[in-house]
Length: 503
Image (cartoon, rainbow, N blue to C red; front, side, top):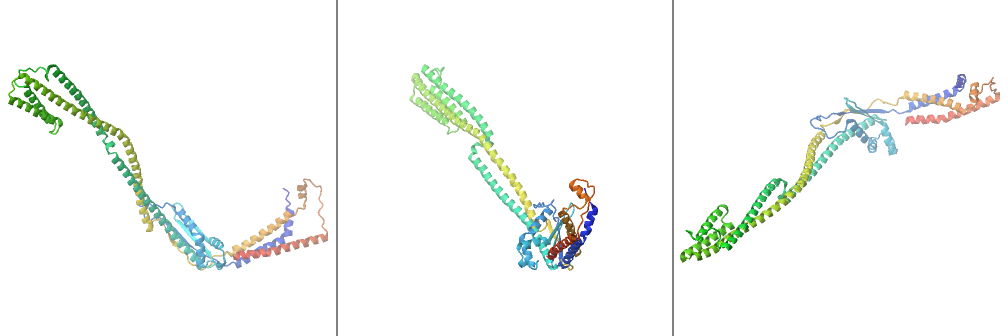
C-alpha cells in the first residue's frame, strides 16, 4: 500500500481552516438547538403482578396465561389507536393537537410512551409505565389513565375468560346430558321392542328348549305307542271278537262290570294327574257313566244269555276303548303341535338374542362413552365455577399499583450538554466528510508513490509541479468561493437541525 503520510499531513494542514469552520458550525447548531429545545417532564407508575390469594392446589384457575404474556396482551390493547387518540384529546397532550393528523397524534403518543417489564425466575413481575410531555400535570394524567386502563383490562381479561370457560362447560354439560337422555331412550326402546329376545334371558331359553325337546321326544314315543296299541286292539277284535285275548266266559263278573272297574280305576288315576276340566278326565268320566248305565240296564233286564251279553259288551267295550285311545292320541298330537310351535319360537328368539346382544352392547358402549365425557364435563364445570368465583371476587392473580404517577416539579429533559456534544460531533463528521470528498474527487498524481502505484513503474527522479503566480491565485479564489458556497448551504441545514430539536 502506497500511503504518503507526509503528503496527507500537508493536505490536512492546508484544509484545516475549512474543517475547523465545519466543526464550529456544527457546535453552534448543537448549542442553539440545546438552548432552544423546550423543557420536558416525565413521570411513571409501577405495577406489580401479584400471585393468587387462593393457591392453585386448592382451586385451580382456568386461566393459564403467564404473567409476562398477559402483560404483553394488555400492552397491545393499551396502545391501540383508539385509546391513544382518546387520551390525547381528553388531556390536550399536544398544544396544537386540533391541527394534527390522527396518524401524527398516534405516532407521537407512542414515541412519548415507554413501557418496561421485568420478570425472572423466582422474581416478581413488574411493569413500569412512563410518559414524557411538555407539562408535568399532563404527563401524570396520561400515566394515571394508562394505569386505570391496565387495571380495567386485567380485570376484564381474567373475568371474561373465566366466564367464557364457565359458559362453555355449562353448554357442554347440557349437551352431553341431552345425549345421555337420547341414548337411554334408545336403549329402553330397543329393549322394549325386543323384550322376548334379550340376551339376559338366554340361559332360561336354552334350558326351556332342552326341556321342550325332551318333552317332544316323549310325546312322539307315546303317540307311536298309542297308535300301535289301537291297531293291536282292532286286530285282536277282528280275529277273536273280543277286545283282549285270554278272557273266558266263565268269569265271576260280567265283562261290562270288569270294564267298568277298569274304567273307574283309570279315571281315579287320571284325576290324580289332571284336573277335573282336563279332556281326558271328562272322556273317562263319560265312559264310566256309560258303562254304569250298561251294567244297570243288564241287571234290570235280567239278561241271562251269556253269548248275547258277551257280544254286546265286547262291541261296547271296543268302542269305548277306541274312543279312549283316540282321545289320548288327539291330546298327544295337540301337545306335540304346541310343543313344536314353542320350540320354533324359542329357536327364533335364541338366534335373534345374539344379534340383539351385539346391538345392546354397542348402545351401552356409546352410553358409557357419553357418560364418561359427561362426568368429565361436570368436573370441569365445577372447577370453572370455582375459578369464576375466584376471579369475580379478585382472589386470583391480579395487577396492583405499587406507585402512582405524580406531577414532576423538575423538568427531566432535554439533556442540553448531550445535544451540544452531538452538534460538535456532527461538525466533526462534516469536516471528515469534506476531507474525504475532496480526496475522492481529486484524481491527480501528487507524489512519487502515487506515480509508482498508478503506472507500476519506478521513476528515476521526479520533477515537482511548478505553479505560476497567477494560476495559484485563481485556484485559491476558486477554493474560497466553493468553501463560501458550501458554508452558505450549511446555514439552512443548521437551522433545520435547530427546528428539529425544538420539535
